[in-house]
Image 1 (cartoon, rainbow over the protein chains, first blue to last red):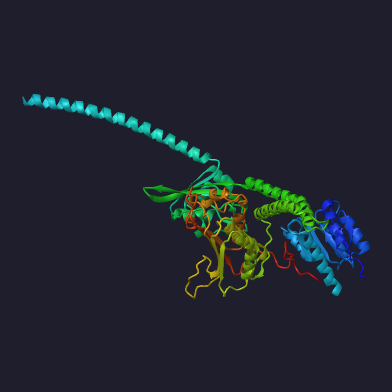
Image 2 (image 1 turned 90 degrees about the vertical axis):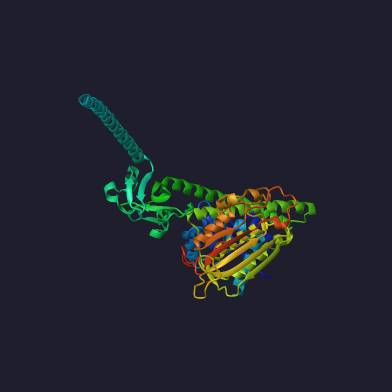
Length: 131
Length: 443
C-alpha cells in the first residue's frame, strides 16, 4: 500500500481552506492546514509536505514572502508549489517574482474548478514520483 | 441783375459750406466715438481671452501662433514674446504615454488646418511638454477658424488634467481592489456548488440538481463580470502584462469555436470559418488573443437570432487590413473578420460602440446578459498590440417588425488587424502566465 501524500494548504479564508482540505481527504491525501504565510513556512519546513498550495494575500505573512522563505531552504528549493490565489498577475513585480521563485502553476481560484485543482495536484505528484 | 445773381450764389455757397463744416464736425465726433467704442470692445475682448481659465492659443493658417493667453503662459512656462510668430507644433511638443513624440503630420492641429475631421480618442492620454521639459496630461479642443468658407487658422484651448487623471486612477485601483475581494466569496460558492453537483458528499435529486445548476450559472456569470472589471482596471492603470510568444492563431481560433459550439448549436446558427493556409505563427500574447477571439465570437453568437449565419475568416493583410494587394507590398498583419446576420448596430450609436459600458438600444431588450465591456476590452488589447479594429453595419433592423424575416436583419462585420510581430509594450519573456496556461518551470 502506498503512503498517503502530504499536501500543505496555506489559505487564510476558512471556507476555502476547508473546501480544499475536505476534497483532498476524500481523494485520499493527507492535507495539512496553515492559516497564513508564517504558519505555512513553519509547517512546510518541519513536515516537508509533498506539495504546497499557497495563497498570496494573507495576514501576518503574505504568500510571496512565504514562497521566498521556503525557496531559501535546501529542501524547500525543490518542493512543488502551486499558487492558488485571487490576485491577477497584473503587475510586473509579481510576474518577475513568479519567474524567479518558480511555482509550478499560478491558478486563479475563481477561474478554477476545485476538481481541476485536485487533478493538477494529482498530475504533479505523479510526475515527481516518476522522477 | 447779374450782380444780384452772383450775390445769391455766394450766399447759397456760404450756407452749403457752413452745412459741410457742421457735418464734418459731427462726422469727426462720431468717428472719435466709434473708435473709442471699438477700442473698448477690443480691450474687453482681449481681457476676456486673456482671462480664459484654459490655455488658449490662436494660430494662422500656417500654424504660426498669433495670440496666446495668460493661462497658456502659466501652464507651459512660455512667455508671449517667445512664441508669437512661431509654429505651435514646434513650440509645444505633444507626446503619448510612452513618451513618443507625436509627429508634425499626426498632430491634431495639423489635421484641423488641413480641414480633416478628427475624432478624439479618450482612452490614450496625451501630454504637453513645458518649457522646462516637464510634462502634463492634456485635454485639448482644437477648432478651425473659417472665414468665407476658407480655413484661415485655428483656435486651441487646453487644460492640465493631472487631477482628473489621479481621480481616475484612484477609481481604477478601487475597482481592482473591490474585484479581487469579490473573487473570494465567489470562489467559495463555486467550489462548494461544484462539490455538491459532483455528488462528492452524496446523491442529489434531479430537482436539487436543477436548482444547483442555476446557482452555479449565476456565480459563473458573476465571475466573468468580475474578470471583465479586473481586465478593464488593469488596462486603465496600464498594468496589463503583455507576454508575447509564438502563437498559432488558427489553432487558437478553432479552440474558441469549439468553446462556443454549445451556444452555436443551441441557436441553430450556421457557422462557417475560413482560414488561409499561409498564416504564419504570430508573436502575440495567447492570453490576450484568447480574450479578443472569445469576445468577438460570443458577441456574434449572442446578437444573431436563431438560424442566422456567422462567418469567421483569418487572412493576411497590410496594416490597414487590405487583403488584395500587389505582391510586392508586405503582408505585415493578420486580419480577423467576423460577420453575422444579426441585429446590427443602430446608425446613430455606431460611434459609441467601443465605449466602456455602452450597449446599443436594439440589443438591450433582446439580451440582458451583456456588460458593455467586451468591445472596450477588445479594442484596448488590439490597439496595445499595434493593431486596429473597426466594423461595418448598415444600421439596425426596422423597429416593430414582429415577424421580421431573417433577411430583415442587417448584420455586422467586425474587422481586427494584428501585426505578425507584435512586440510593442511587452515585458521580457519568461514570466509565468496567469490563467489556464501555466509556465513550465520545472528544474
